[in-house]
Amino acid sequence: DTDRSRGLGDVYKRQGQVTLLNDPDMFDVRHCWEWDFFAFRKQNGFPVTCVLHAGRLVFGGTSGQPLTLWFSAVDDYFNFRTGDNTADAMLLTLVSSQQSELVWAASSGTALLCGTTCGEVAVRSIKADVLSSSSAVAEQHSNCGSFSTSDVLMTTDAIMFVDRSGKRLRRISYSMDSEFYFARDMTVFSYGVLSGGINGMVWQRAPEPVAWVVPESGEYACLLYTSPSPRD
Image 1 (cartoon, rainbow, N blue to C red):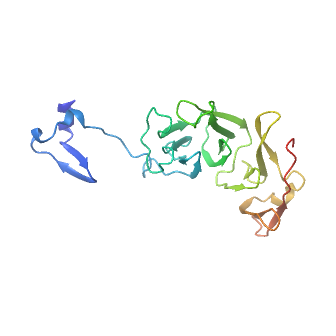
Image 2 (image 1 turned 180 degrees about the horizontal axis):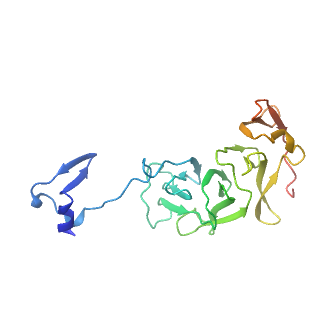
């Protein structure tokens, strides 16, 4: 109320400057007092991932809100004011039965794939229109989990990531038959190569598709990649 607002020191913020109001009649505090904290700050942490998806700029995962995604308005990347319209910015928090945190996010067709330390989640619209606060659903598709400092490789038809063990490279892709995302182990026949852990990786598109991986040993390992059939 007005008395409580004035008790805070009659302070308001205008164009980046803080002004003290000595005369209560200068400003009607009943209609303008909105107090809130910045989503990204030292006390709450900063996003661990940033990606473009469905015309929105998406930030995800802070130390204070490890499973939250911030979506900008459609085609308005600096507008994060939430609203009820379809194209408005929105806020979405993933649900987990275990203590988990977001590691990476990547756009895959109509779905935003999110890798957490406990599993892989697909965020998509249950309606045919644009992804919005009223149509967004988050479904967990696998329970592999991602290594806490893992990045992702965007291949020609899928996404690769390092799983929770830090020693396996997995490929997550959509199956048309089951209408589900599966995270398959790409190192099942050469597990010993990455048994010491992974320091980094990069994707080579040409002349041949190759995933280059740097194990803890410091040597280079490569995975020659051939796109599987749609049923694989």
